[in-house]
Length: 88
Image (cartoon, rainbow, N blue to C red; front, side, top):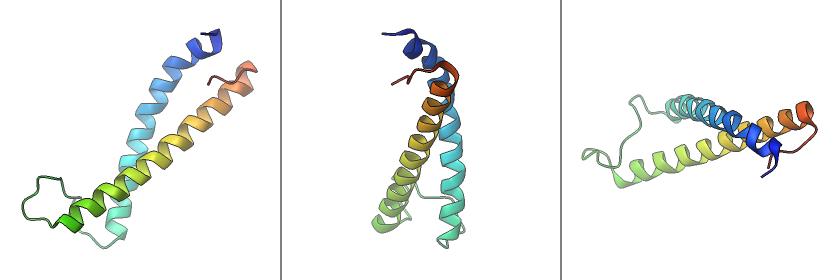
């Protein structure tokens, strides 16, 4: 493992936490924009339909994946600019 990969590990962990927070906030706003006043349903919410639970999970997963990829890519790009080496 080269030094850029080792140096990037703590940065990657921090970016992962940031991306989780950003994705959570983006999902809450998206869920509201889709016309839902309440919090997104959990899989075990008895009063929610299958359609609502699976829709929420699908939207949440897509948002999380997109935000994580964007934040990871931005972190890797910044690392290359600072060190001259791609961390991946």
